[in-house]
Image (cartoon, rainbow, N blue to C red; front, side, top):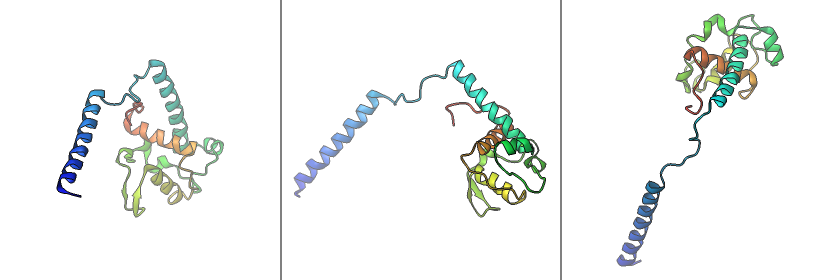
Length: 154
């Protein structure tokens, strides 16, 4: 390629980039997921979330009937999560994912929940996508924040 061809090619690319940038500014940001949450949607979200929090609370505090209903074995030692973490204190869910020295790996909150179930409590690891895991997470987040999560912000 000659110097003139290279210059023309560079100008074309620069013009194309400039046109795309101008178009993006004129069109504005995408409006996906920008619709306001209605009071009915918010109420449905809060009800569903609090239902999970209640189940998670029962699991966290060692309720055998709830564990059986959700088909999980969280402890074989008679210990419950709440015996080491009353009201889910000292769980710091907002700090995950992070390097967890006790596990020698970069871990999520779900990893840490399973580690606690398997190691100190000698329970059986639960599936990360299970209802029991979601309930435990909901309870831990709720306990640490004192309120439900704001939909659309996380």
